[in-house]
Amino acid sequence: MSDNLTLELPNFEGPLDLLLHLIKVQKIDIYDIPIAQITSQYLAYLHQMQKLNLKIAGEYFVMSAMLLRIKSQSLLPQNDFTENDDEQEDPRDELVQQLITYSVFKKVSAYFKKRNEEVPITAAKEESVPESKKIQPLPKGQITSTELANTFVIVLQRMKIRQPDIVSVEVKETSVKEMSDFLQKELLRHKQISFFTCCQKMQNLSDVIGLFLALLELCKNQEIRVKQKRIFGDLNLERVGSNDK
Image (cartoon, rainbow, N blue to C red; front, top):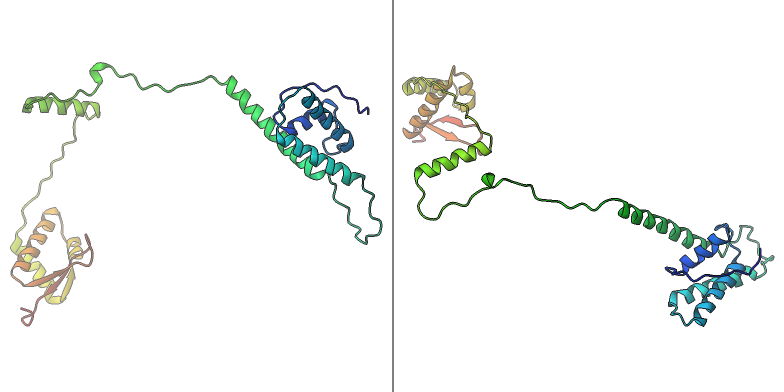
């Protein structure tokens, strides 16, 4: 392959970009770079830039020093007196790795640039709401009960609450005296009882309410003591003896 190469002067993004350009136009295997040839062409490019009085970034000269170092290492004779049979490291490996990494990032950058140009620019727009549906500020001054009720109706309509469910619960009155007798009988058999356990023996909601009222009445009369270990926990009922009063 001839070392003569006509160099154009495109805007390279750095020394690695220039090296990739030299490798591409000459169809060189990136894993087997003829370092002497590439170094000569690279230096020729810098010489052209200097002749045209172009401003050269310092990183180009750093790369030229690296190429010269690799070239000098490759020209050195191999040491045949070493007992190490392992294959010696190729001085071009570091440069090859940098070129491969740069090439990958360059392709990814080109992909995103192309995709950005092809995908249309979109912008979000606030939802269009008719003037009649917009929330209006409350009028200044006193608001009548009729206006407040009308506003509440509008709120219900917007929340799609057409009609609330109406449920009626009929609670029959249970005698507190009857439930008090029940608790006293339980406490005669057991010094401590659980309120939740007692509720399980009730037949309906009315009995539970009566049981709770009886519990309050016995506490008021200091006939029982109520303890609760945690919030919303069970109530432990304890009979108060004559010595505790």
